[in-house]
Amino acid sequence: MLQLLRTLCFGMACTSTDLSHSRLVIGCLTSLLACCLSFMTSNAAVAQTELILKFKAGDVYQQKVTTSTITGGVVAEKPVKTTLQQEMLITTKVEAVTESGAGKLSQVIDQITLDIDLPNGKSVAYDSNQKEFSDPLLTALHKTLGLLDGAKFQFTVSPRGEFSDFVIPPELAQIAKAQPQGLMGDSLSEASLRRMFEDTSVSLPQGPINKGATWNRKTNVKLPIGEIVSHLTFTYEGPENETLERIAVGGDIEMTPAEKSPLAVTLNSKKLSGVVLFDKVAGRVESNQIKQVLEVTVAAGGQTNDITIESEVKTKLLPAAKE
Image (cartoon, rainbow, N blue to C red):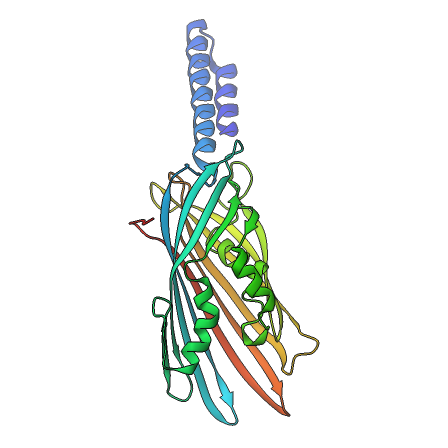
């Protein structure tokens, strides 16, 4: 564009001897420059978008969180495969809004369902709405998952998705302290429960951004075999449609083995990807999907096995909320 202006100016200086002609060319150049500036300004305005969570006191909405995990490998020279799918229905209520625009929220887990296919051909189906079970495995699951069903959690979320003032029910806090680690890790600890609710939200950047902007977030989970740390990178990809904005998720995964674990686990390879659709009008996450694939080597009792773990977490805002 600057080269075009230089060419026109050079032509005007060398060939325009008529005053009116000069004024005409100057007028054309002025109009052209004004159009260029207008075009550049309007493009910048369209390109920049600010992503913020919006809260309105009294609002109630429901989300469905689905976790799918497939674990496969060869153990004792035999192929084994375990699949697990868990669904949670969570109702959120905006109790109040602070002067800074943060939302004081309460969330209740309405229902938890769990379907497991074990290597020995046995299938397990759990529903937290059911209170009595004949299967010992379901009874054991209910001792943990049943504690979450109907429990009310409270916390504050900033317009950027930052959590604070997280409070769990007192009775659950007492049980969590006495809960042995076991295979469930720290699943009932306050930190783990906080992570569970944070994962249904999203981290957002400060201020207006352009397409291609990136920002980061770190999450971690402690298991009996060690600690898994995910370094998430969010990339703004632009509008999905008139109301939804598309955010890609990538990143890296690290594993630190536990010192006293009976299992020695080595992380050989990892993949992490996902997509967030953010409703800029409502100021809420419409959907959130993150998938990761881990290839690990597990050594125990003198045996070494290669295991692949594929997991996917999906969060979807349901159209009909209930209180």
